[in-house]
Length: 420
Image (cartoon, rainbow, N blue to C red; front, side, top):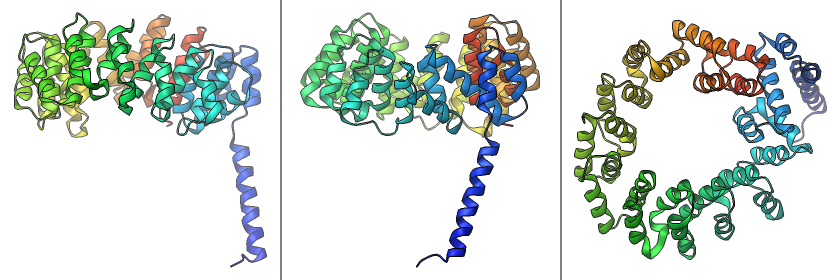
């Protein structure tokens, strides 16, 4: 049924009015750009402070411009992609521009839910920039055909190889099991060997031999990945190897084996993991705490709550971060405050966690720490507290920092911090 003409005109007028409202509310990027052109970062911050939409627009514009001149374009593309509509306009401008590799990285970020087809995808996967190849395969790996992934396992960049190996392993294509076995045994980078070791069934008929070989090596990271591969393989021989390693000398690799067995429903694995939680060595307890989620124990939260009273600050921090149940917030906060009262890195991390939760004393302490921190420490702190609403004003002020890497970290924090 056709809409009456008067009603149709009303809809058109309402649409036009809505568009005008959106335009009038859009941040004035031209003024911001002029200030940034003049390196007047203080002026740019002063022009937006107090207006959350304009603050976000400035943060996105700063990252956009930095990416266009080649400063951390991959980090910028990821940050802008995570910022939703606040970052999309910047990504669109970068994608339409001529700055490389920022334009290709922005295109990937904009198309991350659906890769381009044919020649466009092939061009990105073969781009001269390792960042572009890595971002493409890490974004679309599960949508890339096995033949192309197998070729990328030979890429010069280990990040590309590791992600290509992971995606190829998930495809579990028999025709490429040899490629994965070679990567597990021969690749010069430990990350790639570890990713291949996780593949389990995808390693093919020789999987058990490959995993046994990797398990007996002198690289704990690769050995632990091989344990996960054994769990994926799931044969009796694989499970026997897992149990043998879990019941051997209690080290971090044994804890990982126990957690994998527990995940598969083994009472032996559950018992050994519980033993690790009360071991006298804090490294063993910490590893057990990290692996509790994967083990999927029914009383996981209760076990983690018990670790909040652990004498090792590192174990307490792991437990506090792993509980994830708001009903126990008060106990978590109390444990973090005890760690904060101590010294060293653990105390600083507890301070930052409390600041994210909104603790006034911790927020003030973080502000003081940022005021005195060097470049590397500023970036570390910003990374830990970037979701703290109470620190958003500080993040905005740091968009005017004299140090470009700190400005970029502050911009990422502004875009991550909830708007008040």
